[in-house]
Image (tube, rainbow, N blue to C red; front, side):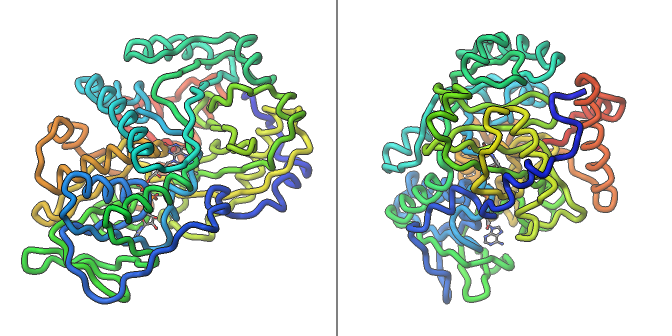
Length: 474
Ligand SMILES: Cc1cc2nc3c(=O)[nH]c(=O)nc-3n(C[C@H](O)[C@H](O)[C@H](O)COP(=O)(O)OP(=O)(O)OC[C@H]3O[C@@H](n4cnc5c(N)ncnc54)[C@H](O)[C@@H]3O)c2cc1C
């Protein structure tokens, strides 16, 4: 038994998203965003960054902050925020380890430092947003982790204890208290966390970062897909169809997209996550569910939803199914998936039956750079000249700024507290090649769903993965 209907989505569930625009809500309203010329001809640069998502943009800005005189070129294959950075839920977390629990199990000796570094990054990110006047609807209403099944209640008290141990202002809410905050018949209890959590408009954050980077002298090129890297004469030549950049250092911030270094394929699997956004709720609809606190919410379970209000009072509702397709293609045809949207709509109306009749205005999906330890990792190659940062596994809105800073340390040969950590020095356990990769991931997804149906109890397969320190998440 789970909190979600076992019956397939109804015609009414499907009808609710049938006419939704198949593109990210955040990007859809950015029609005024400045566009940047694509690369044409040859360039020389101290640093060339590949990828115009949060990792690439933060790296560009910080590279100039650290050394204003260095020349920086950023090459984006599509447009700024085209990847996960323009498609996410906008939950900004201080955690750089995909939550304290995950960090504790994988980096027990370093978790104190990682938590502190994460909170510092969170504060500095806020300061940068103010310093560069980036209007991105930054708000700090706190977060709720809600239990929607009895067995999830057991974990809540433990979660509060863990958060409090690391200095979070966290408390346990019973069903009455959580339903007084947001009224869903599925809620049985919750953890309320007010530390290290914020909500942003990721579309505005991406374009704001690009504007700030351009203002401090970064050359941004959109429509500039990099096809290869070539080491030549002590530098790296980065090629696109219409030009090249000869750079002293290269930073790869390509996330779940096909990596320019083949060996990285072992560590990242592109996992698709899907999102629905409603039309703006009326005052009456908002009143029917409460939610005046505007806190971001995620529910328990291996297959979880995350949801929040937008600045214009829509509900963004995403998650539940994390889809891996054979061979891991990242392609436009996977940006929508009616099967997943159906499940999302069904579970949305189960959570908020008061909103039956509300329609969704937007539906989309995006690829998540899942790695087996659920947190960023780093790769240094070409004699220290090429650095990769990625693998945030669905929690990269905040941690990508930290990933960018570490990648710059590595590219510049700077020893820092972070670069001494195992977190930075060690790689995640690799995924096997296809066809085994697909089989293992499908089996794991299947077992995670089964555990949700069986009161959260992990079976043999999940227990074995846990013992090996491996997992699958989004
Ligand atoms: C649906 C969804 C919901 C999410 N929700 C949240 C959330 O609420 N909170 C959270 O913390 N995280 C969330 N995430 C994860 C978060 O969005 C990512 O961790 C983060 O945006 C990663 O940023 P990035 O810059 O590393 O990658 P991306 O934003 O994916 O950027 C990579 C860029 O590289 C470009 N590129 C790739 N290859 C090349 C090439 N060869 N040449 C030139 N350019 C190239 C791509 O076009 C892309 O723009 C979510 C992700 C998804 C998909």
